[in-house]
Image (spheres, rainbow, N blue to C red):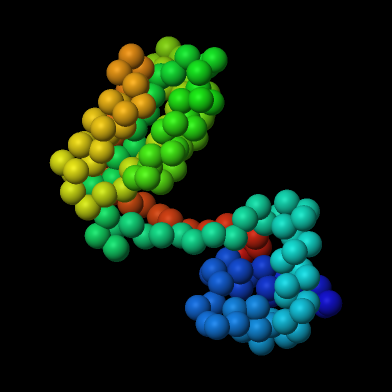
Length: 160
């Protein structure tokens, strides 16, 4: 594989996978590599940790999901894994993860995201989440997003 072809492949991957029936073949045609070389390179980059995952960047607002809430929770550290798994199991929770607290101003250590088209429905889902998972004793705050700044995939090549 040529170094130049691999560089072009990284640049092309920054734009996402082509929406074709054979995206690896399309990338091969765009980079001068073979389809097999493209698949091998992506496999190697994943194994090396350069690419952690291939996924979809969803532009929720474009799809009509404008009532998007991040719910932040202050959960005792000894329970954060089990509470996080319970929250993540709710069908309307699209993302759930732990982060360190930033005391004294930010006591929250568990975050979950709920995307919705109606604010009242999202608030109702949060109420049912609290009731169903017995979360009444954990302080939380609901933060609705008001603006989407930028959503994009990984950047692999400097464009300077």
